[in-house]
Length: 365
Image (cartoon, rainbow, N blue to C red; front, side, top):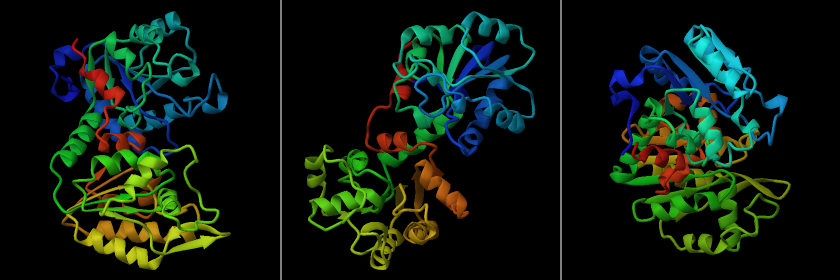
């Protein structure tokens, strides 16, 4: 059973909280999503120690320091944040214990080799910096890392307000979605969408595919996709071929190309997909349907985004950093019922998979 921060007695929230966030983004939206959690903790705890990672440094890398995130946290919360840029744990403990600040930000945890290995020794050392632990990083909860999984074995652990919000919204979505359900899947890899396609096969009225994910399926269907981006040859092509037989799977019927590569869906596909979306009562979307980095190949994604936004009778859920940033750029994000902070975690949850960072919170304390 998971203990939720918002339902926990304030008496249990005294002392120093180790708070796992996901600051691994150039935009501030994931930090903004966790501000209610930080403020809630500060009302009850003495101090907050923020844990996060940035990029894939493979050891210490000055270009991937979290130092710059200190100012972002300070700006949103209006109080001083202390940055600890080393991992000399006795000194860190002393600094946190004696410091006058209420908020501390640790350096990029991926500078430590034990983080991605879910090393219990590292988790124990981190745990000694606080009195209890809160996970509010849904976006990385599909990772098995020391600061997400192993650490829960050493401290009382809770799901933060944002993590709880995402878990509830997605659980409700999977348990009893309003029908018809339409699932829009784009982005780079078809293989990454396999789990969602399989898990929602009997619930979805239509899967609408675009992007490189659609290119791979078109290729397996025998379509000449030229130099289009597709999955690697060692992907689960057998699984993808089975998906091609789904009667509710729709693939692009026309497209825009450049240098013999498919880079966007065409007008016929836009009309067909928009018609399916118009009749839906639940729409789930992950991944752009074209090469949105170029304006001329973002028209399909924009048309589908607007079609979803116009269907006000439907519950409209979206996930994936690139998709969400696209919506924000075109000021469409507020037209959606639910925006997930997750990309890979969003897809894995929708595929019915257990996320290590969430499962770790289920352990009996």
